Amino acid sequence: MKKDIKSVNYGLEKIFDGAQDFLPLMGTDYVELYVGNAKQAAHFYKSAFGFQTYAYKGLETGSKDSVSYVLMQDKIRLVLTSPLNSKNPINDHIVKHGDGVKVIALWVEDAKKSWEETTKRGAKSFMEPTVEEDEHGKVVRSGIYTYGETVHLFVERKDYNGTFLPGYKKIKSEFQPQPVGLKFIDHMVGNVGWNEMNTWVKWYEEVMGFVNFLSFDDKQIHTEYSALMSKVMSNGNGRIKFPINEPAEGKKKSQIEEYLDFYEGAGVQHIAVATDDIIKTVSDLRSRGVEFLSTPPEAYYKAIPGRLEEFSHELREDLETLRKLGIMVDADEEGYLLQIFTKPVQDRPTLFFEIIQRMGARGFGAGNFKALFESIEREQQLRGTL
Image (cartoon, rainbow, N blue to C red; front, side, top):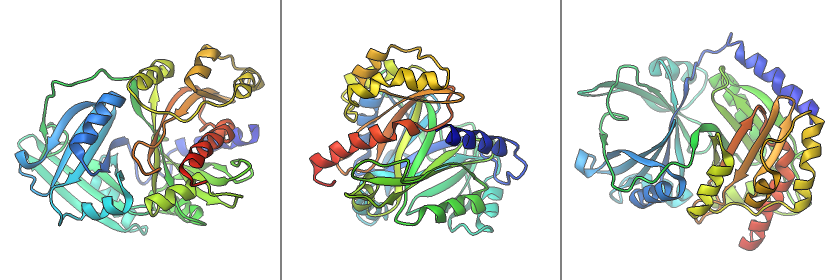
């Protein structure tokens, strides 16, 4: 484990020097999901996850072929989009993949330059630089394809003072449930097919200037039945982190294979959202009906103090409370982290969410992989897909 953590620190030092950062990214602007029924999906994310209505685009705003609801919680923006007729190509995406992430929008200073820098390095264009204007100013957007049908949009909004984007209007809802303490997107994980991980690692390095600062192979991430491999990519300032997973050989079908089967291709596996108080956040989410993976066995929690002591850390939270809620703990030389994973948020076993609180740790819970995989495998067994 300590060997892995050292590689993390080395990688981050390399990233933060910024010398080769030809694509400066200021953060995640928004995440857009294509869904079968945006109105109902918006109600779910509001009532279950504590998001609040912010903006809308639809028939009432002049959009004749699609409808979008923008939800916010602190710095997180989710856009839920559905087609309004059978001719809209969004239908094809939903029929093939089910509800899932289509767009990972990245906040940039110069959308035109971002598109030029990435396309000249080999990116396939999704959207040429386009200026969108209304009475509140202008936004410039451009975009490229990444793994599967997933898209990175570059959003330049320094000359815009309106609601979200031109074409949207701010809306108020009488139903505005209280937030649950979600702050920002910590990272987003992509699943790719057999032997494709290194191809996409190279793509992020060459096309977007990212750095691979942490790697796990099937010797580290495995159970009795299944395994995967993963590499974590980060941009120049460390604000954007994209772990990339691929399946590995095992006795039975891994969660990555299950995802690829039901999503019918590569795509975003989960969105990790940060909180400052995971005990309160998870308690609130459970009370609102959010379902989490099964709790690790008691032996897992008995081993936590020793794992923290190895790095000279002391747990500030009550261990019994963490056990009752099913929250997992991992540590590195910088500190520890607390994390938990929801069950898939749609009927297909594809997209899910991670709730994470970092207490100094920069890793991704490597010490929890075995317990996490075994929990997922219990769900796969129930689904008959293990």
